Length: 177
Length: 295
Image 1 (spheres, chains in turn purple, orange):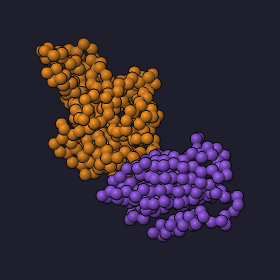
Image 2 (tube, rainbow over the protein chains, first blue to last red; image 1 turned 60 degrees about the horizontal axis):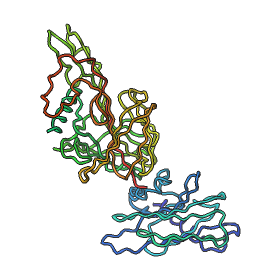
Image 3 (cartoon, chains in turn red, orange; image 1 turned 180 degrees about the vertical axis):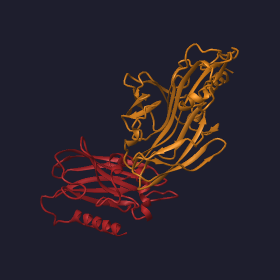
Image 4 (cartoon, rainbow over the protein chains, first blue to last red; image 1 turned 180 degrees about the horizontal axis):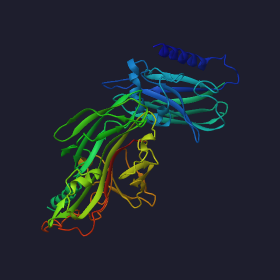
């Protein structure tokens, strides 16, 4: 219980940093906007969403996983494997809850999250071509993954957009200092 | 008619080998890829024609051995056998890959006593051989058989501790981990026969869901000199993998052990050979059910 609480707090801090102008001038951020579609279905559960970054030849890094982390006995982790591409790429080697990565499921609508280079789950990025992936899997629903390729370091004003078709809406990545 | 005769022939061959492997034997786990700190799988176990529909005969569960990721022996729980299938649970408490296997070994053969050919009783094992052959027996001919039906399930990241070969029968050695299969990607496995690369082994792969399609969709593969095969999965789903030597079953033509010949249509049932042409051949069979995920 205490662990969960601490995780939630750190999540809030990370979110706060996204819009903060007090970050050091050199710290670059990845600002991600993920739209979770509002679906008219008989039985709706908020999706499990995993966000991770891949680079050819490098170990994929999980940045955020939104799931039912606060269920008794960690029951919510049973369905993490249904976020199957992420599970294969990164999730199955992790233990949960994962500090700075675990987060609560999010409601339909535009959800924002930011990651700072050199800090937290994103860590330092060496120059090169990356892909940020967002995968959503919904209980008694479908699954979808969208890919956002980007170069690091980003060009000023660069942005990457992708559009999901079923389980994800618009997904956009911008870069900030 | 023809099919019936073929089945009769196959059954005769199987009874000789003592293995309960008429039709297709299989185990079907509820999941092969699991997350969480602990989890359960339920396994259906049956012998049937259509994969994977329990419609013929249950598989026995008393010989099933669970090997846990650390190599220690686990257990099956809640085993029950019905008319068409058996079912049991395995509690996964360690991260890594579990093996759930039904392995049997034995010796088949015959001897002459007082001018009559006698067969070794079913269930004869190598160590009991001396006690089942009476004094005065002549022309003793024996061959070992080994059958292995195994599935793999993984909690968390796949591990490889359990894949240490025993050196008996046909065994699968992963190049690609059997719980890391994705459609469109080639999976590579090495097969061993009695601990050595099973060069030229015929391997049959059949996708599940047979009941709702006309074509069997069978893939016939031949292991290379190192016993390796590459399988590219056309679709996600459950696949039945089978290989055998010396048995005249799916997986390749039989090498002609006694009783293995299937009579043609209209031919009278062949008499039991009073004396085999040669010594019975080593028999081994391998079965697994592999889950292939969508990319």
